[in-house]
Amino acid sequence: MLGLFKKKKTPEQLVRLLVEALNEKVEGADAERASEEIAKRLKQIIDLLYGEAEKESNPIKCQDLAKAIESENLLTLLVTDLERLPFEARKHVAQIFNNLMKRAEEKEYAYLADHVCQNAGLLDTLVHGYDKPEIALNCGSILRECIRHQSITEILLHSDNLWLFFDEYVHLSSFDLASDAFATFKELLTKHKELAASFLDAHFDKVFDRYNNMLLQSENYVTRRQSLKLLGEILLDRNNFTIMMRYISKKKNLREMMNMLRDKSANIQFEAFHVFKVFVANPKKPEDVAAILLNNKEKLIVYLENFHNDKDDEQFNEEKALLIKTLKDLQPSPAPAPAPVAAESVAAPGQPPPAPQ
Image (tube, rainbow, N blue to C red; front, top):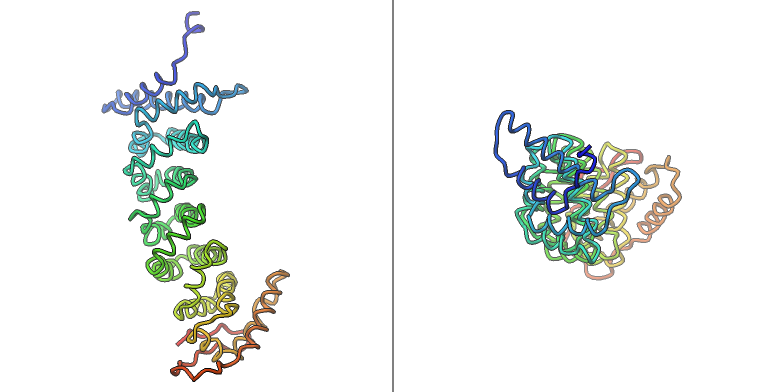
């Protein structure tokens, strides 16, 4: 009977008990007991944050819990120990972290985002979670919730960890892990548009050299397709106008898109088209870019007239028609002839264009 009236633990007590269990270094039967204690406390915290059954969470208790978690640096402890926790406990850690990051968008909880910013090692651990398949998806989920906050995103963009996505994580052999890493990578470059535009402009050469060489040349088909689609989204975002103009002024980038149009995958060709069209539509083409298009004018027109004619997509068909018209209207510059540019051609109708010379 006494158990029926057992007093529930306060938020502060729950956090303290969980911290003690996480810090307890034991083996054998004691380790199993400690693991059960951790799982129990995590579940109690979940219930407090999300509410139980038909009972909603208590706002005051949630605020007390968040303050206790921040005070005890519990988020760092949980992420550091994530690998040794059981499967369900890992899911609970992600749920707790993500709930708090959502709440951190509110004034009463804003300090939680600052807390993450001040713990650079916490973000490092989360990013490097992609090195460990058993916790990669948990860490990815948490990272994307952290990216809700511009202050955290800024730290991630300007850290060495960003380049791990270019070089390693989006190329992981596991489809699920590579896709999750790409989802995180995309959020970093698109969530906070002004911040991302500033970053891309300041690191233009490094970013797009990596982008062309590592992502667009990836041996992983899904990575190449996702990267090409994301590139189109980035270039066509109004916040990235300066980045788009820099990208489409470079002859090597036009060559890259011509090569992508040759891909055996119809989906890759289609995504390449949406980047290629920006080069053609640019009214202020640099001389070397204009020369490539002019030298290929007739064959490009023929190629595009036979390009994805089976697509029932009104917008695509309108864009293709406009592109063909723009190419037809291309004329040599009346200015003195520039230095000779090697002719680059596309193949006959129905064939992929050859690689630019």
